Image (tube, rainbow, N blue to C red; front, side):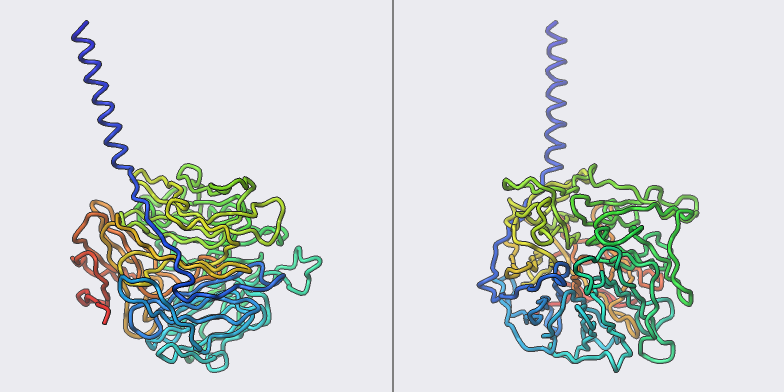
Length: 536
């Protein structure tokens, strides 16, 4: 009897030890954020009524080659505001509002990219009315380029954007997503206007006449993504079911030299109808294929391939929702007394605590004063654990703002290896938080460069080893909600003092793995050793 008791006791200790081990493995380091909006000099407000219930984007990019991310914040009926980053490395955040040429009104979305591959960041401004491409001149000065580049700005209510370089192209292909007919304020249902592609004209560095994407269903987010690793990105579009008739989420074939064509149910694509607002993509399970988080109103989705390809067979375009299993439904406020459903907008995968597990940020905010949805709707910061599940930590981290949020960005504004956060709010000042964590792991920041067209290597896959796993992220322009970024790509590394990194370039060419030290910024160019970059 005593022997049996001893065995049971030892077994109990073993179970307890195992439980403690599992608990230790799933311990999540909660980051600390401190709001520095006022002290940093941020006073931008996204203003406007009917035509500005959507939009409210933020763009982060380095326009003076000092490594620090500058910002453009959409203003709606007020002019967009450009902020030059004046922060010091590791210090408090500080920005100077300057005149840059980007100060247009009616701006809802802002996306940075190097259109002409001259090394200067350009900006695509989505507006209520004519969209404008602003050419970067260097040192954070910009000029209108619509006429010079053959860009048709249209006269729609534009709300989504994505860009890619098709195979063999020297000039990008732009996808513009448009919303409802803004003149139909009293009865807008069923008035979705055409989205379009602007491809290169084939003879020079200009855009051809826009090509309509029919059918169009009131797009709020777009993303060119190589979902099946075929080497040819498809165009994913998230649509707002509030206004379309007979619509759904969409996935388009966009093959060089061919007319765009929708994926069909015969190809595995299943109809999905949500209030589609934002898209974020990341290979969460390190299987080589990307997962997609789709924001909505109380109906957020986390999609993964239902059946990754086997035996050399191509994957079907069939996705399953794992949001509940992974703990990222984020369908109601997690703090406060308002228990009505949430409204989610911008979303982004990033490792905010540098533990080697990518986390998820979601900006929340009522459309206006919709009574069936939460009025006080805190932003989400969902931290991924070792088991692949996410834990809500927005309040503990200090970013649970209940302002009516829209766009935003996670970026390392003070170059200390910790991702900071900016969020654009409707009718209120944008908010800026500095990541002040003392419990974060190691990290690297990477910027890609290649000669000729597509200098920033849009469409490449950046891979970093983390133990036995490979972290992968697709380099893209688009996604989120009215917000884009260009610059350093961030990876957390946990307790790893070294790692290996490689690039699979847009044409499919894969570099050799390179060993790099943690806690550094690196420039990766084709077939060249990684170059350490240091702030001057």
